[in-house]
Amino acid sequence: MAHNPKSIKELLRIGGGRLGNLQSRAESRGAVLTHVRAALSPALAAQVVTAGLERGQLTLGVAGACWAARLRYATAALRTQVGQSMTVDVLRVRIKVVPPST
Image (cartoon, rainbow, N blue to C red; front, side, top):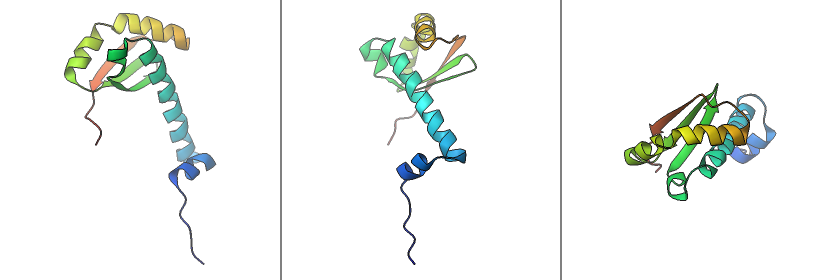
């Protein structure tokens, strides 16, 4: 009897355990990224590739060091706007340069 492997999409749909937790976390990070991008200018928003919010810390991954520097100038307004749109307290912002995806 042949065993047909399941796709990752199917495994995530089934959920449970670690995969369910992973899917939930990915959805949460996607929502944070949407709120962050909405609070920024289009040029800067396009350079933010990851975003997460945990225990009041907003962590952003950007495509390059020059974009990280530009984003640092917008952190005060970003904390306020993302905090209001997500109805959470954003206490601090951490910006990281992430390597390009291949």
